[in-house]
Amino acid sequence: MSQDVIDVHAHILPDAYLEAMRDAGLANARGQVVGDGFPFPVWSLEDTLCVMERHRVRASVLSITAPGVQFLKGAAARRLARLLNEAMADIVRAHSTRFAALAVLPLSDVEASLQEVGYALDELHLDGVGLYSNVDGVYLGDPRFERLLAELNRREAVLFIHPAQPPAFAHFGLGLPSPILEYPFDSTRMLASLLYSGALARYQRIKLIVPHGGGAVPYLASRIARAASAGFQKGVRTAPDEAMRLLRTVHYDLTAMGEPGNLALLKEFVPVDRLLVGYDYPFRPEATIAPQASTLDAFEGFTDAGKTLIKAGNAMRLFPRLATS
Image (cartoon, rainbow, N blue to C red; front, top):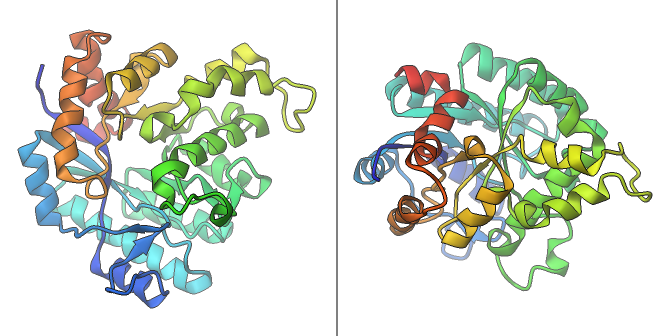
């Protein structure tokens, strides 16, 4: 069953962003930019459009991968976030049927982030917001992010939370770049943080997307849910059944979920209307796209109608502009 898809997990790497990272010392000896220990690939908009054509990607949702603008602080972070948001808005204006975009924020400064949310959504008309699983080592359930989450909830915004390198990574990283093992685990910590703080329950109007199939959450969900009401729980106590319900309200993209066992686990964990296609191009190379698509096509656990929802229907509900285009 082949059909056009909407890819909710695609990144841009403008020259100005790469130059800012190099200026901050985030490059290897060859001058290649390195983020969270991972060498950044070559990117161009023209190449992205060609890849989309070759793999029947009807539209892609653009965002900025980790570390976002977190390697800068103060006015420099604000300027870079504004530049990137305007760059994404320019791409969307030029190719309105092919792209949506998620704003990047200067997250070390919540007040500045709130101002950028207003500009990005009200002036640039971006389609949602991108955050990261932790900000300077602090997870999103922390009270310092309360005003930001409340504003996104008020707006009923789409919120895509990309994993980031966890704090103290040097002590347990095994010498690997953090995306290899720790990105899935940091998404898991982030969702646990939102659940245990009560934020996942308070802000249910946020349309939350977590990539990579939610990391380890589908496997650990019952364990996470039981801990939500445990005696040692210092945050908001939530009954296990309610905790599971809340975890199942999240949308999960299928980035790197290229094995039938991945899909089987997600099928048992969440309803089909919570799953989305994600290819993570250009960080996952083009050669990974066709096998991932073929795995979904061949998977017998979803009906054809369910696969249609995963490939495009669920994304059109989250990004209605793409549905009308």
